[in-house]
Length: 315
Image (cartoon, rainbow, N blue to C red; front, side):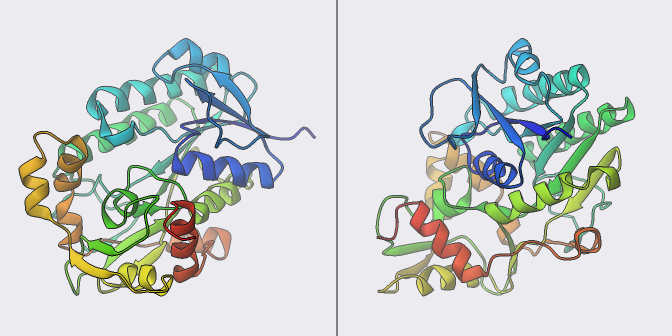
């Protein structure tokens, strides 16, 4: 039996890179589509030069693969609204051409401010933000594709964090990569819980699911529970637990974000998701635990330490 193979779109990003490592460790052959050379890509990956916005490039790169991991996320949310949906259309076209399953790292952006505090895989998606509506429409396209016979797997997660900078609060807001941590900017409201997802654990979850393809539905969705910060203060505490000298914890400068939002796209996008820090939204991972037996989980403090080292914040 030949090794299974996967194409990763967005392999230079945080989740794409971690999924590549997890697939390789599990015996998969991995290809990555890149516009430019990237030294951080695992050496075992077969790099193919191309653009995810070019449908022919994606279809050509997908030739012979069993899975396409759609881990694309334009850096700094630049032109997000103009790129996200065209890129998923290209991925769907490629999956249809080669008979591959699409894997999507999902988020809770699809759920708006009126969403109940416990989110299951069937909770109605009623986004209250522009970005949330885009994510909902992305998943609608995948559901439509599944109705046409294309296999889809979505693993929905809380806020990403991991050993590589990316579009996430940890590396863009709470700490500054490649600098010692002296100040922690905490966006959480005290007493309000928040869901975090450590990327290596998310990647391990995806691979464990893919290794049981015969048990997956044509369109399957799983919630990833991740690290639950029960009072909005635990992430900051875990950062300090990894420092020799504890850093000062301050509230996120929302007012500054508001002032600079017209000029700084990242601040505008962070501000749009402010409601996620003002109310609890917890992903119910009962389905995932029943399917796998247990959710892959690195101890919270260890995961944060690995992240800080990867970001260059610890010697």
